[in-house]
Image (tube, rainbow, N blue to C red; front, side, top):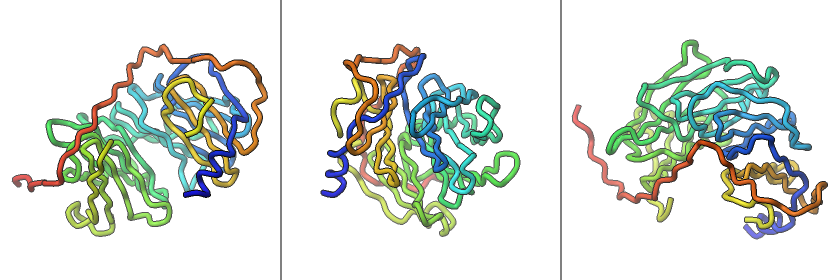
Length: 281
């Protein structure tokens, strides 16, 4: 931990990108070949050069707020994005501006607030917002199957918005999820049913750097190879932090608070004990 703190303290801004249209930056993903993908509050996915932060293209197609972006681990020219519009979409980054090459859907009532791709590159999982008073879902697809590849749904493990879905970086069957119900769950998907797959449940007690952003930081990404940090936030700025970096453009920072029509809403954290009863068949 001390080593990480030292690395963070050594970072300073090396590049800054101000888009023409001010938007919240909600998530960022790194392609090893040199692209950054950023999800924005205007429902678009922007592509940037990793080193210069210059925009190189964008994708449009979602009709609701985006919940994340991730590059395929096995085919780095393929990018996935999830949305509250009830879809996860796959894009070919070699063809900016084109329609989605794949669209994954669940039930019409599903609105996704998190998603992730397994390290094997074949399994997608998305977490939904709370559908009714006590239900939220984990939805699974096989990206290799035609027609959406829907595999199934977990419905018993969370009772509120599933805000985080993360696969293990090396074990394709290991999945961790977090929710505003206060629970962090760990699954072994090789076990089959949801009850058998649930390996551990942690009940949490609650739902860095200075001088860069003028408003809330919404996303960050650590580039281990370069020991650099990329951050995006509600001031519309995308920042690249490097050890000893010196920003090329001098001048006073100005607030770029987005005036987007999208009103981002946050829920108060709700903590529930893990006392779940089996639903009637």
